[in-house]
Amino acid sequence: MTTISVTEDVKEKLLKVASELQIKTGRRVDLNDALRFLVDQREKNPRLLEEACSPILGVKDAIKELESERKIDDERLERKISHRHERTN
Image 1: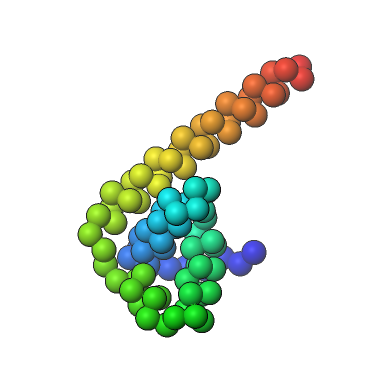
Image 2: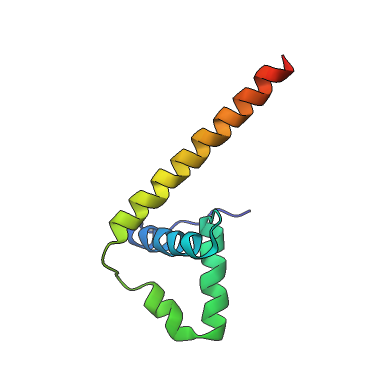
């Protein structure tokens, strides 16, 4: 894995893409998945990347929803791990 740096506005746009993919696919999507989707689509349709990176109304709400859902997922995972750990002791 490689670490990349992006500006806050690009990060927000990537989170928006990730949240839309998560809604469409019904599974957890990370920023790597969002970047892969954009790169793949860029190869198929260059205008799609431009469209995906343009400002969209409601992006802040989508980001909050994605962060909230991730927090719920993390809490659920923590409970599962704790529960399994308690059973083994």
